[in-house]
Length: 97
Image 1 (cartoon, rainbow, N blue to C red):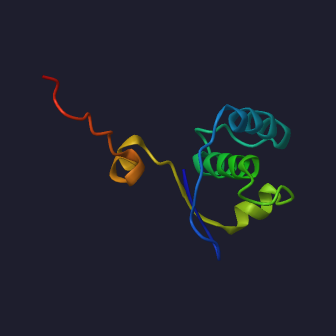
Image 2 (cartoon, rainbow, N blue to C red):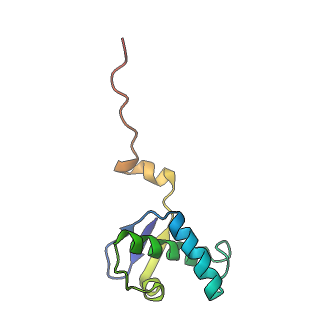
Image 3 (cartoon, rainbow, N blue to C red):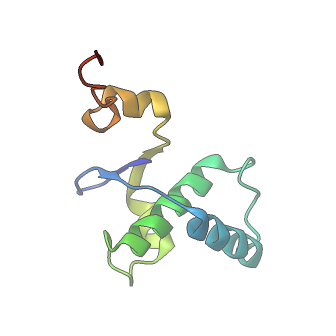
């Protein structure tokens, strides 16, 4: 996902199952809506969790402070990835024969 934060460089981060599990337990504890009822909070939370886990942001940065500085968050689909350098297929090489 791509995150635009106020006064910070854009961030691209990959969430995984650990972030989803943390969302589930945190959502229940805080009585937040389900992910499909609050998709931007969900994506913002996943990006915060993934960024903390990856060491991209300070571990002490609370979700609430992180959320306050997020201007935009979006999921990078496979189509978006194909437009970038990392998404280009590997050259298959010469034809056999």
